[in-house]
Structure formats: structure tokens, C-alpha cells
Image (cartoon, rainbow, N blue to C red; front, side, top):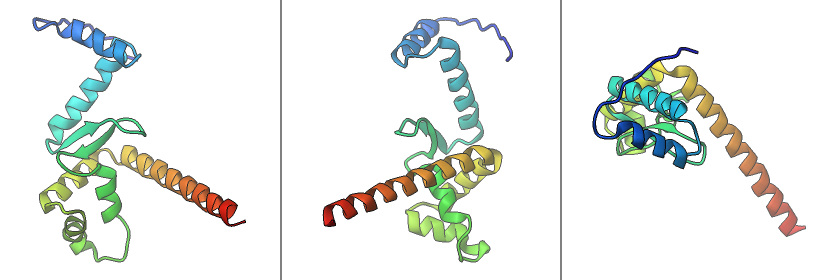
Length: 140
């Protein structure tokens, strides 16, 4: 852990940070670290932003799906590598520039996206199992 001293100027930034942290039931330091990390990632990848959702914060294309959804549409499969980006753009209703932006983010933060993809897969498997079990209970 590294300790850093930050001086806030005008615009009540510190007060707004404390209030936002209180609403989220977290510390000002934890929220500031998250916001700085996300801000640096968005500065490096201008077409990517962060959204809240049931699984927490996640990177997404501005005006589009989560980065994990784009990556999942590209990685693997039986489509030739040289047409995957174009095919994913067609399937997801995106431009190739948006697909390329998701790939650029994935190239830098591969471990994060792969972990999210695994978590999404685990949730989908669990939900399908529960759905099948409910159907069995109803038919039995």
C-alpha cells in the first residue's frame, strides 16, 4: 500500500468525495482510488466507461455493451481470425471502431476481463441449473 497526500482545491471536491463515499458505505480513500483507477483507464481508452450492475462495476463501451460481451463474441469460435472483428460488429450492432476499442482495453486489462468472463459463465451455469430444477419440480 502506498500513502499519497492529495490537496483539493475549489469546487468542494473533498466534501463531494466524502458524501459519495458515505452514500456507497465505503471510505473516501477506497472511492478515490477506484475513481482514479477508472479515470486513468478511461483516459487511456476513451470509448470505454464504467457502469454499475448486479456484478459490480464493469467496463463498457460508451453507448454499447460491456467489454466482456464484445470480447466473448470475438475470442474463440469457428470464425476465421481476420473476420472476427467485423463479424462481432455485425452481430452486436457496433462499428468496427467500437470492437477495436474493446479489444484494445482487453489487451491491456486481459486478466480483469477474463476473470469477469469466468464469473459471468459461472453465474449463467448456476442460473441454468436452477431453471432446469424448477422445470423438474413443476413437471414432477
